Length: 112
Length: 115
Image (tube, rainbow over all chains, first blue to last red; front, side):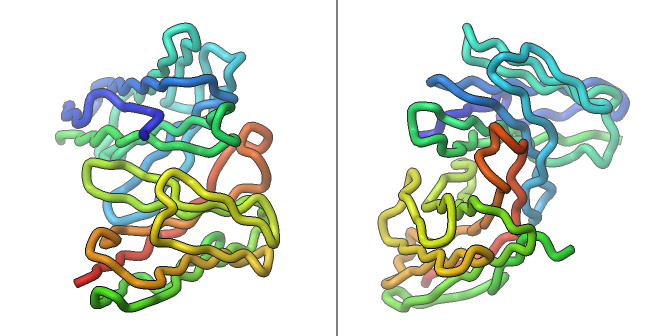
């Protein structure tokens, strides 16, 4: 079964606005990662947050992790057309031999 | 750097035929993974390997076999293809457990259609 579940499934915003995507998971994790996938391409790693961290920044990306609620959020500030892509969270499941399990993704569309 | 290379990129099979997808990485990574991606399902882990000569089952291993005879290569085999195996297959690699090193590196995908 899927571990990470992203919300919303799809999101359309105007260029320049901020985009927020959420991820929920069900078990204990070592870390949580976010990936981006452009149409027809492979996934590209964006950022990793460890289970003992609460917030992390990388450029225009801000990730938060709440292990008590088993949830994470990805914020993209000042969105650009090039941010149009699908975004996936992935968790390293401590209870499943450290398998890396992905969610179903959020499709983000930046409107010009 | 080539990174992770998958071959072939596209393939059409008839039900019952067999084929092998090849994944090659030039980063000296220990861990390698095969995922399938279907519309609305995200990525699901098929099999993975934590080092040369080792393999392990993922979430959806049935109908697939894998081999890791060389550290740089991870092969995914379909012995008797079924229409349900129509999908886009992604290979990924990492230096070690991602908790230690931070990321998976993905290939560009192999699109398989089974008629």
